[in-house]
Image (cartoon, rainbow, N blue to C red; front, side, top):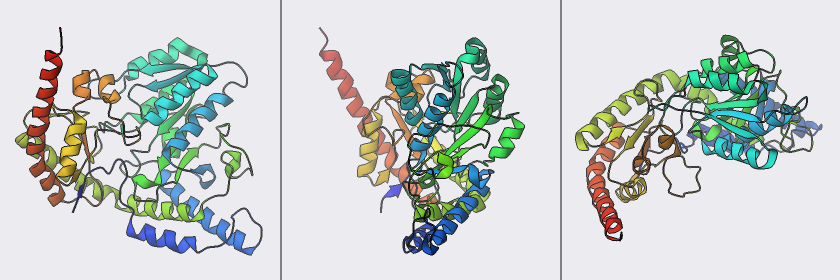
Length: 407
């Protein structure tokens, strides 16, 4: 049996979600229709929206269903950027370095097609954003900042960012701020209303939107949400029937929403106890790595990090080689985000943290989840030394060949 340690990419669908999803698939009716079956579908849809909203500390009407985290981030950044052009031209998009590719690629698209200017706030060696520099960037760009965004928890190295303080900086500048909570959802308490109040966010300034995705918490793939404050105005990406406050037109997937709701409630109910369990497993894993491969370096913040995340640099190796060797040994891990189309490349997060390109190519991400056991951790630790030895030999051969090729 495969040991699955890539829960940050996607985590197994909960059995109760599968049951609820299958039962909901038998419901006939478009929730936008006014006849009886349509209204029954609408009732189930809105009940699911209410249940998810409770886990996010928001009003149900603020929760907009999407196809997942990537769409939610695109809708937030593009939609807020476009709206901010209505009274005057604003071009700056402010974000920390090392963001998820859903953010990086969206900002790059805005640069190419909308003449936006990307403004990147640096990360320190632990992957934490510089609050001091972020404040300076708001001051430097002033009213030219159209929108700001940040990962709540880094999807690669697991470092947790100071979300409330980042939101407070945006609020003080009067800039709408989006929080990518895809990796944080199910691991950290999320309360949009509470965060807005604590950070001094009012109206359309400060924290106005949060992105989440169902498949990260044991829900179905293909459904997520963008939580948008009532005070915020977001230009939609698509147009049609005007569903969901006009922010995301189209027939809504009732079964997916119900599956999402079941996963959200179960995850929130178990969250505190589960984080303690994962923390113990993570400590077991990191201690085992230090013993089995003393050369391995743990990256990210050692304290302010997700309990489920272990991110390593294994000097002298290629991360993709380690991944393949471990896969042959029956252990599934990752070199980073699963959203890079399967193309091996150096970790842009580690590069943003000041690591060398060789270190950035030697990264390995191990992420734990609801189905992870002590036996899974021990099987990974058993497979690691041999994989590391083979990958190190291959890395040395690559370097020797490269050196020999030089004139």
